[in-house]
Picture 1 (cartoon, rainbow, N blue to C red):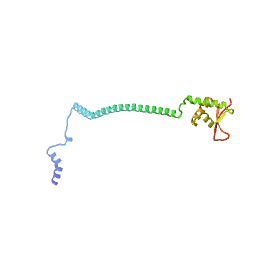
Picture 2: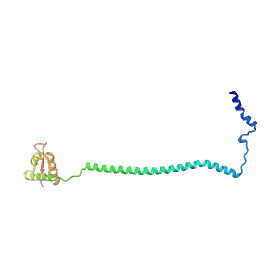
Picture 3: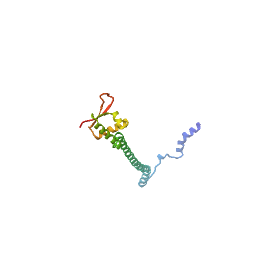
Picture 4: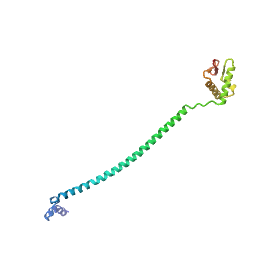
Length: 177
């Protein structure tokens, strides 16, 4: 092992003794044109990978721009769709909150006319709801429909009041003209 280390350490000295010079000690002669050509090739070799990389980056940028454009279009479509859905939802909510009033049917109109004639025929122009139900032969819901229709057809002509004898009972009153 010691012999190997000694041989390695004496190698540079032995090379100099044999006539070998280091590259820094050798003299090279070049003409101006050769030096220019050498520099030109060295620059081209150094710059070419950078130019290739720039070209690749430009291609990548072009591809990314097209992807961004496609994504922006897709985003616009999604936003438009969401806005349309919100508008439709608002319309549906408005219809639920304020349902369109449908015109009363023939039966309801007939009942309202019967109520009007009945109240007009009574001397005090009033009747409690139980009496009106018996006169029409309907349940509470149908009576309420008929009274509502009567009041809508002749606004300000009829009123609902509490019975003086029993505050729990309601009466329909025909108001004087």
